[in-house]
Length: 400
Image (cartoon, rainbow, N blue to C red; front, top):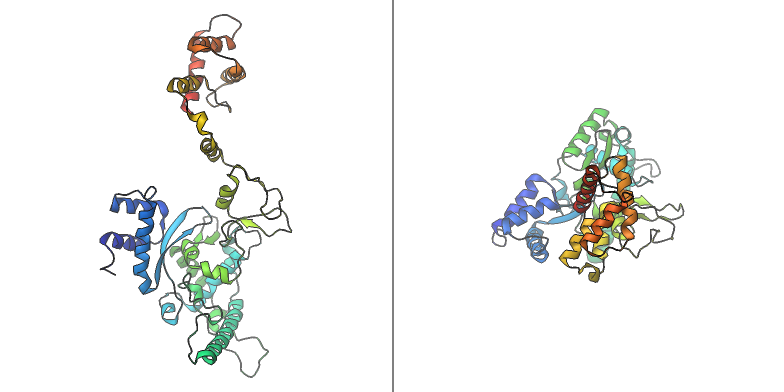
C-alpha cells in the first residue's frame, strides 16, 4: 500500500482513523491543504483521490465510505470494514451482552412508526434482551441450513450468504453482526431457548455504562434531554443491515428512512428525508404533493433557499442590464417585508414608497422628485423625513 499511495493519501487515512468520521467540509479542507486544489471545482480530481485510497484499502477489506447523517443532512466520510467473518468479529471490544443491547436499541429506533429516528434513554435502558436470544437462534439455524446446502452443491463449507450474514461490502464490520450463542435443550424441540445468563443478568448499571461507551465511540448519539439517536458509525456501517432487515426506505434516494417525514395519507407508506424533500420541492415545476398517492404534502421552503432558487431560475435576458440601470433600480428598491423600518413612522414611509413603485420615472432627478412627493402634499421634506428616506434606501440596497 505504501508504494501505491502518496504521503497525501496517508495523511487523509490517518486523519480518518485517528479522528473518526469527518464532516465533508473538514475532509475537503484537508484535501485542499494537501493538493492546493478545490474539491468543489476539481470534483473529478477529488473523486480520483478517494478511488485510489479505496483500491489500496480493498486488499485489507476496508473502504472509505460517505454517508448522510439523517438528523442534520450533512455528509460524513469514514473508514469501515467490508466483511463479517469470524476473524473480523474478534476485533470488537464489546461483549456479547453489550452487542445485544446495542442491537435492541437499533431495532427500537428503526421500528418507530413515526419515523422520528429516536428512542428515549429510559425506554432503552428497560429494553429486554430476551428477544435478541430468540433472533440469534433463528439466525444460527438459517446459517446451518445454508452451510449444508453449500456443501451439498460444491462439497465445500464456504458460503457467502449464510442466512443473513452479509459478506458483501457494506456494513460487515458492524458490531451487530457478532452473533450470540444460544444453548437449547435438544430433548425439547418446541420449547423456548434458554437465554444465556450473561443476557439475563445484564444489569441496569451495565446498560448505562454500555450506553456511554456506544455514545463515545459514535455508534449512538445521546442528547442532553435523554434522547438516543443513531451515531455516525451506525449510518456508515449498517447500510446493508438496514436493507437486509427491511427497514422502510426513502422514496427519493432509496436509502433507509430512519429520520424522515411521512405522507399524511394513512394508507400511503411513503417517507422522505428532510434533505430529500428540499431537493424534490425546490424544483419549481414539482407540486408539494406526495409523489406516490398525490396527497398534499405540507412543506415550507426556507426564505434563503427560496430566494436562491428564484435567482438561479431568473431568465438570462432579464439579468443583462447596464450598470447605471442596476444602480438606479437598487436606489429605488424597497424590501417587501418592511426590513429597515425601526418604528411605525418609518413603517408607514416604507409602505407609501412601496405603493408608489408603479409610477413611471424619467431620469434620475424625476425619480428622486417623485419619491420626495410620495410622503407629503407638496411641501418640501423636513430633515427628519430625509434621514428616514436615506436609512430605508441604504437598508434596501444592502439586501439586494
